[in-house]
Amino acid sequence: MLRKFGVRPLPFFCLLAVSPACKGDTTATDDESSSSESTDSEGTSSSSTGESGSTTTTGDGDGDGDGDGDGDGDGDGDGCAPGSEGCACATGNTCATGLSCVDDVCEMPSCGNGITEGDEECDNGSANADTAVCKSDCTDQVCGDGYVGPGESCDDQNTDPSDGCDNCVSADCGDGVVQTGEECDDGNDDNTDDCLDTCQSNTCGDGFVLSTGCSGSDCEECDNGGLNGGGNICRTDCVITTCGDSYTGGTEQCDDGNQINDDQCSNTCVLATCGDGVVQTAAGEECDDQNTDTTDDCIGCRDATCGDGYIWTSGCTGPECETCDDANSDDTDACPTTCQDATCGDGFVWETDCTGPECEECDDGDDINTDSCPNSCITPVCGNGVIEGTEACDDGVDNGVTNASDCRANCSITTCGDGFDGASEGCDDNNTVNTDFCTNACEPAECGDGIDASHEACDDGNTISNDGCSEFCSPETFCYNQPGSDCPTGAAQWCLSSQADCESESHAIIACTVCYGPNAGCEGIGSDVTGCNDSAAVGPDDLSCGSDPMYNYILGGGCLSPGNSEDYCQFSSTTNWCTN
Image (cartoon, rainbow, N blue to C red; front, side):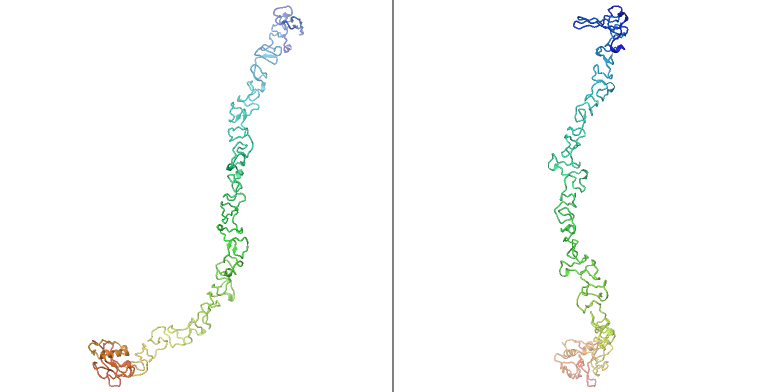
């Protein structure tokens, strides 16, 4: 089709005559050559050129030289002038102002037709998009237009670098700009300084050791992140644990924060243990000899003692050395609480864990063989005929047999008054009454022994009759009651109320003196007495009394001679002989 090349057929009348309408396509210039082109019925064109001007004549009949006779000069005979809207583009694909040549047709500019035209900055046709190089409005994609285009990671339509988008580049840790959500941004990936490559501040517990750009306590010695503390070598303050910092970590067994070496945690932060050579008193140790010898003075870091179950034989002297140690408090077995082998005389009765004669019945801890526990540590047996222990005697089967032995049934020697009639005793009534049938000398009461027994009427210590007490200890009474005998004026009163007083020689002497005056005397004291003679005495002048001084004296009434050779004292148990 000729239109494609910008040539339209001339009108028919332009082929027959020259007409002004057919001259519209003729152009003359002074300096350029002119050409004319004609097209025949087959569409073949012809032209002519002159030096000083040119005249183109086509067979278009309208004089415009396009050969189509429609006067538009496009040669297609359709009346559409090249370069005008809707018409073919003019030479060089040009169009009238404001039009664009699109596919050889001049059209009004249209964004999206793939041709940059008019005031368009770009036009990539169907590739136009707000996120493309050429936006949908045919303007170039630029940073700040609000659209994220190629090469952009963001577009916030501002120039604030701290809002997460800087020059259409999304905030990036390490870009040196502290963006929203970042604590810091030092533009490097060094995690030993105060800003990590995550743009977060380097802090204790983040797992990174702060050692660059810091000083003193601001620097970290370690940082194991979530493993800080909990017994690890790095404390929760990012300081490497050391012995004495009160934190137990790493290889430390303990850390009490002090420099006391004898407590439960040593100065090397090792738990106190028996055998480490240090006596940890706070841990209950009494000694620490760093050995396992159970025979010396330190066993299990405790001083060796009786009862600990270990026999102390080395490093000891005298009684502290042990011969046994059964770790119990039983003093009746083979090893008492002295930790010395049980023996007779140790004060402990060995009665368990023993056989035969080694078993003891008693043990008083002394070597006295005559006490309750003899040196055999066998309890004495009264009646075996052997004096042992506390026994005073032992006559065997005769012990306690009346009149057969002086040894009582309990092996004690009989004594007068104990109620046992021993072989050496005549009797024993187990009392201290001297006037019963058994005297206090444990002899049977007898007439003539001088003891007035309750069963005797009298006992003058002899067996002579006619002396006031017969040989059978019956009384012989010759005294008469003569009341009314008064003592001389001024004489002291002497009163007798019993025969016992009359029988007292000293009383009789006093009676003579009192009753017969101060000059009265009893002649023959101690031998034959003739009587009491005094001229002032009241009573018979002649007092001829018997030879027994115990019965020769009277009070007041004197002696009477009843016709026999001996006079006897008058006696009354109810009358005072001397009255004043």
